[in-house]
Length: 532
Ligand SMILES: NC(=O)c1ccc[n+]([C@@H]2O[C@H](COP(=O)([O-])OP(=O)(O)OC[C@H]3O[C@@H](n4cnc5c(N)ncnc54)[C@H](O)[C@@H]3O)[C@@H](O)[C@H]2O)c1
Ligand SMILES: O=C(O)[C@H](O)COP(=O)(O)O
Image (cartoon, rainbow, N blue to C red; front, side):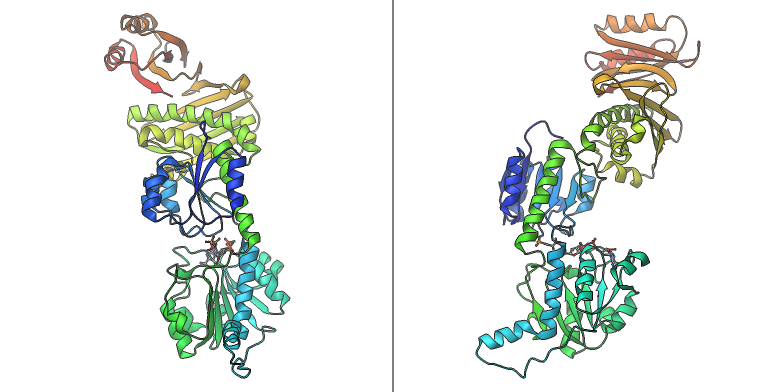
């Protein structure tokens, strides 16, 4: 959430509805579709949010030039034009609008299937050319034919519904489609080789990922039923275009309808020379209704995130609803503080973190934990790795093999609400717990199982010592002699004469030589400066 007015750039042709939403929500917005990549890199540094369709390539280089960028909003579904891995590493939220153009795109796939079956584009061009070639265009019926869906998610299932209405038999290959969902949709779940062997029409509806890239390879195309027709309204990279050309040219396939291409804009392709190929320039989502839907949705989602911290439809972080965001806000601060303290103490002791556990007790147990745990991880990791936020923290923790666990205890103990964070390194385990007091004031209540009540101050000094007479006097004197004012002073101990903790709030950072002096005092075990 920002304190200054956020600024958003719209770099693709979005409906003007998006501009209006941003303005209405008090966000500064610039509408600059059609910028060249270098021009975009020049100006992106000024923006907190970037709204795109598929034309803008949100690359690592672009994001490196965008130190203020917090959110990329995709007005549409496919995010293959966004380097999500780099965005995540940089702590940038990537969100899309998963449903806004699904019906429109499914309708386009059905339109393409009809266009292929009846050669409508060629027949139209011939008729307009005055040829009246009534005998040239012999089509095929869809009735009773088998339609093979590769990918049966939002769009695939709408295509299935419409095709069943046309009395087609629908089969689907989708590893994530359950038998129950297939049954509900009225489609038969099959393996890819079976689908290729049986389908008269094959239609693609998967995202473009490392797994789906080239899913219709030369070998897969060779296995398609002779005379079959292909429809691709998903992504160009799903199909080997050279192999498709060969299969169409040889007559192995009867036709293909392509809305998407490996390289876009596609202004030249051998496929364009073939009569049995129908093409549209990535028009799947191009209806007034769909464009209005995705523009409104992406603008609202981005505004919610920038203004309130609510997160919907993010690809790379857990959701936070608009209702949850204000409830989570004070806890976000609490976990940032206790996480930051744990991280600073870990950094001071040079331990390699093996595990981080976050326990939520009482009221805290009732909250949406995933974003809180992500924020706690960010708190721990920031002192060790530099700027980490709740977007990249879980990924960084995973990359470093840190085991992350969350537990909830519904019943509250001494505090009505409590969050305890435990960091386990290769050498020790350290826990820090905090609560929220009246008006959501964060309060530290426990360190290493020892009760220590303290407010967080921007500068603190954490000292562990042996609980023996003389420490407090010498410690106070050391700071006083250096002219350092103690703002707050908090003590705790495991047992009389045992390990003790002293946490002081200071008016500013402690100078190195004073810190060294404190470390040399008798009974002091360690002294670590903390900044929040
Ligand atoms: N032409 C256009 O203008 C246009 C418009 C919208 C969407 N799209 C494309 O359509 C794609 C699908 O959109 P959606 O809303 O249906 O997405 P979705 O996430 O709802 O569905 C995708 C489906 O693909 C399945 N899948 C994933 N990997 C697979 C694999 N290896 N093999 C088979 N199935 C696999 C998933 O399980 C899921 O069910 C988008 O990712 C986008 O690239 C294109
Ligand atoms: O993935 C999508 O939503 C479609 O490919 C639409 O792309 P577009 O917004 O560039 O039309």
